[in-house]
Length: 228
Image (tube, rainbow, N blue to C red; front, side):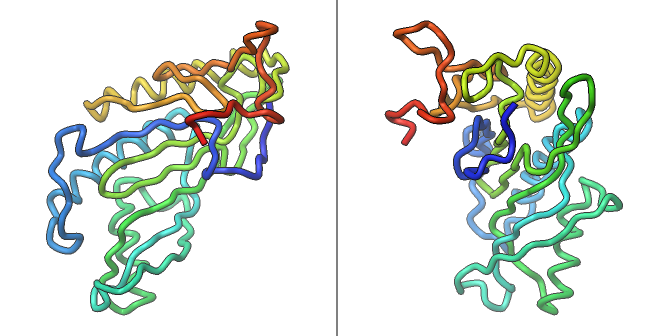
């Protein structure tokens, strides 16, 4: 298994997303007054985070928040980090963010998107090992993205080396989690191949070299083309 890639969320090993508009939700036109639409999106986010946490695939520890104080609604967004401790319940995240930002700005903060960072438990060599930033979660009022930055979910690692035990211990967990997530949300999981993996909805596959019939070393030579 390969971890600690420098590309991280900007160039993930694999990603899935849920599009609110495709799911039939109305567009959020006003970040201040479209409260019902925003609440529906946060409810979807909570479902995603709860399922990930249930299966030990992701527990948020920090967020990168983008937005503006309410009095500067038309200004350029500001970015800053907030830490999340274990006492913060997932379905209280929106209120937690409002409370913490109000301490900073002394007024309501209108946020447009959130990047979640956290810990993930990966099974390796018969042990449960906690890794930081194995997954990244992105949320805005259009979609939720789930990105993974490790290759524990494919039969061969990114260098094309077999990792049978790691794959058997982790891939079914990911597949079960994604299936449960879709069931909870009630709308379709969206996905596509990228330069590192082929994706068949919940299941990941290695790219195969046409000439040799063996898994490709995409660590050194990612698949090029329309992914770039």
